[in-house]
Length: 129
Image 1 (cartoon, rainbow, N blue to C red):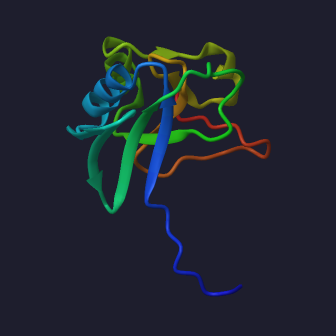
Image 2 (cartoon, one colour):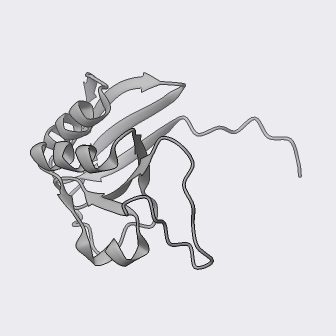
């Protein structure tokens, strides 16, 4: 493999309402909003990684091709917190054993335990049992 100096600098999430989406993720992750420029709203950079929300006129369609995994010491309690902030659980993924949530604009993300957890041969988790 060739050496590369390329690194992921920031993750950008397309949004109908970047202010609303940034406020949700800011509260969820404990990262304050630190900037606004043009169609972008930025959260505080942490561990070298930026997180921004970009206004777009294109509607989201279908399943996300990439999603965030966030960790929590108590995923069930975190589910309640996500819901209180305007997110929701996506029950259609319950058979996989992962706690799959959606932000206010429907972007999927998983809440996983902080420590290790088991997966079966088909990739299903069991940390919610």
